[in-house]
Amino acid sequence: MTAQESNITVSRTIDASTKDLFEVLTLPARHQEFDGSGMVRADEKSQRIQQVGDVFVMNMQNDRLGEYRMHNHVVAYADNKLVGWQPAPETRRDSPDGWEWVYELEAIDAESTQVTLTYDWSKVENEKVRSSFPAVSEKQLEESLNLLAAAVAN
Image 1 (cartoon, rainbow, N blue to C red):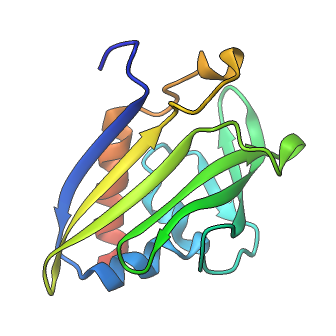
Image 2 (image 1 turned 60 degrees about the vertical axis):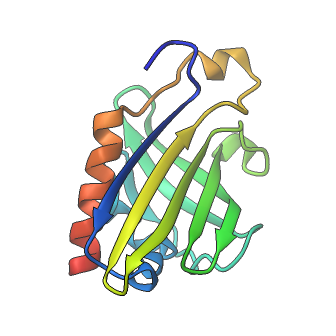
Image 3 (image 1 turned 30 degrees about the vertical axis):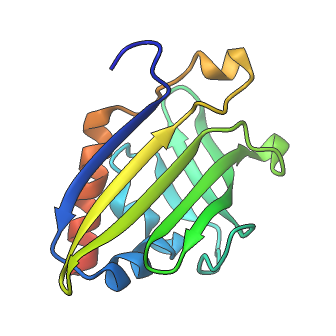
């Protein structure tokens, strides 16, 4: 990855149906189970993601910011195929800074799915915010997919 790049994408095959994976991905209460960064702590009693425009709130923690909350605005949704969101900090809960997480699901067969996770900060306009990217590494994204495989198996 170079400094000019503005996204990281990882993929892997997971032995699960697109439906089973989508069920896990669209339930914020399960997001901590597949967070390879270790920042997600718990959801704030959020409902299942059902459409673009939904917002779910996550309690987060990292060494630099301590404990904080993010309001995640769903920007991509296609049943059993795609889900993505843009986080907004508590202080600007209705104004995401532009980075997003997108999961794409492509069925290989009935019980096997190619999962692609993209962490994209190309839409971040605030230079101060943009300078902090990437905050999550390719290795952490790969771990997210490994953890997703384990979560869907349980």
